[in-house]
Image (spheres, helix red, strand yellow):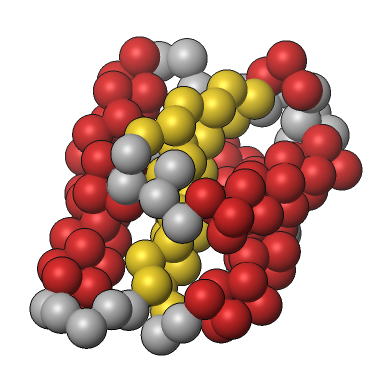
Length: 149
């Protein structure tokens, strides 16, 4: 059996990041962790592009435009949706996740989804560093995996 091995070498990859400004403390933490891991795995600072949007629902549209531009090998979605007292949490969580998945499938470009959906601020803060870093590793691995197939 031939097996394609995990490859986390980010050298030469061009990565686009779309970050929500809503819940800014958490989103800035996600971005810091993501950026640090991208650079640690060989992605050059000049090959990382950041676009910020108002909230999680706006992320998929900008991801799609970036995917269509042909300028990026992989994309990352960063955001935080924290449960409130209304049904709005479910709408934003579900629709942003659907939109991110749709962009990936329509474009064929890997999109790492690190839009946190948590019950409270403490959960989001506890997860931001781990999930931001994981998103960087996911996007690098998926770009390399698709190239190897």
